[in-house]
Length: 389
Image 1 (cartoon, rainbow, N blue to C red):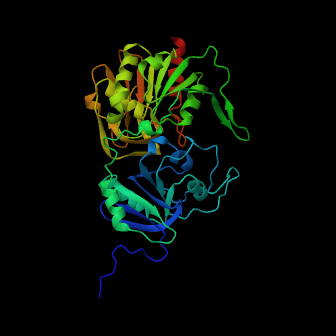
Image 2 (image 1 turned 135 degrees about the horizontal axis):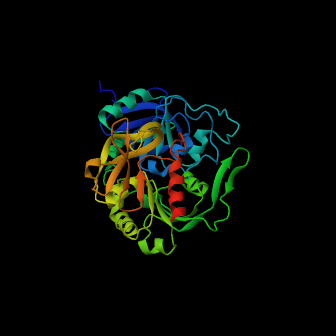
């Protein structure tokens, strides 16, 4: 008698997560049919799944949500950090249910289907999270077929053939391709987003978009800045032609060393010109590279809305939102760069500032979305510096 197919889908399975190790996690697919390959990570936020999925920093990644009930509040066009989701797909414990929120416009699974994103439910996400914590973030393929038919061997080979995020520049893929002025304001219940108002007399911040979140620009505008956005590949001359009072380095996906090949020379020119500079996440890592520090791939990364960070200047602890898989090595910082914040989870670097230039950065997301607002003051700090100059 012929051996049974070791990769046969169990009854009722319409989706799977196939890891490069050859392991297969079966479940119920939702969203779009198809498959996508990337790095499998986990995210601990209990809310804000639309904001998480539309964060460009998640390009190239499949998100495992540790909170079991994802999709309960539906989807709407306001809770977006970019124009479309950048996460390749999501893995969740419970099936997506009908929305139970007055702001919902459509179901999460319908929203994902309209944006060609694959979902997988019915997975033991606690076990998968433990696996990532102990074994690191693996390469994997998330797949959905309503007929339950999968070529698992092909999917395993696809997962093994994917090169991984190390050495990969994704900022160019998610960045804007043109210069534009940001005019969005803050959100108010029942009114949506207002406009930033008149720009006359406001400090001008030129934001380099390596994969930015909209809420960053909103917070810069709320702090009193006029904001212009330029592509990740903008030259020093193109930036300075806009006459900035300050330059902002945004978050983004991929390996900072790869993006740094074209970004670091520009950042160094900005520093040499004495223009005040503020960076977040990938922007923090690029600032570190620009002053001679090293960045390394983290074992599992930091992704969630509850990460405690210690501010070394006064010992205060900020609860922060994080999303990064690379980190600046603190022992590689030059004498003119001092560490300002550290993660209380693992002691990794979470902030730096230069002692001889008006520049600082943090590894976390002070704009949150989703997450706490302990660190919003950093936008006011930066814009306040520009006013005083």
